[in-house]
Image (tube, rainbow, N blue to C red; front, side, top):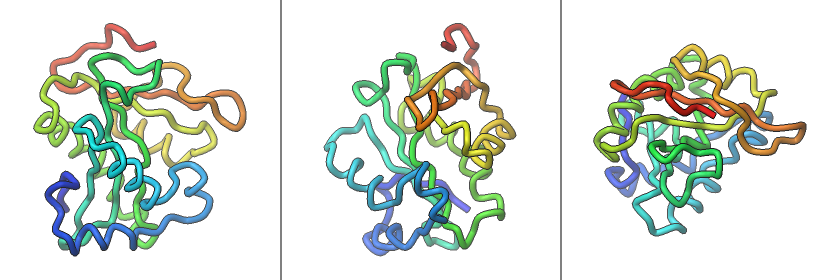
Length: 168
């Protein structure tokens, strides 16, 4: 398995991203890859990056990272935000999400060395995602985006050498 920046994907791999399928109950939380690619390719900025997880050189998961002007009001200035984690339904339960969460800090340090934390916002009803994030070291850090009911759960993951000095 390998986590790779979208810019390093081959044209064939970029096309294969569109084959990633989510169960319908997860699409309401994460959208689909076409939505994520629309956001990525439409912004024309290094402040939003796509990341793919390759399994046998084929993309099986995708997510977006953003920083700077793309951070929400609750985002910390030293943070990057992860959105739209999508693991192909045919490969769920095989540790791909966990691998993404464990490999992401190292990739993030090569992309944006000044980033000290990752943040995300997850629907409180998305129990599978919450379990994954908690199991890989993310901490609850306040309210995130407005949800269907109340607010999503904001979560933060500090990168090596950082401390929780401002988590709200």
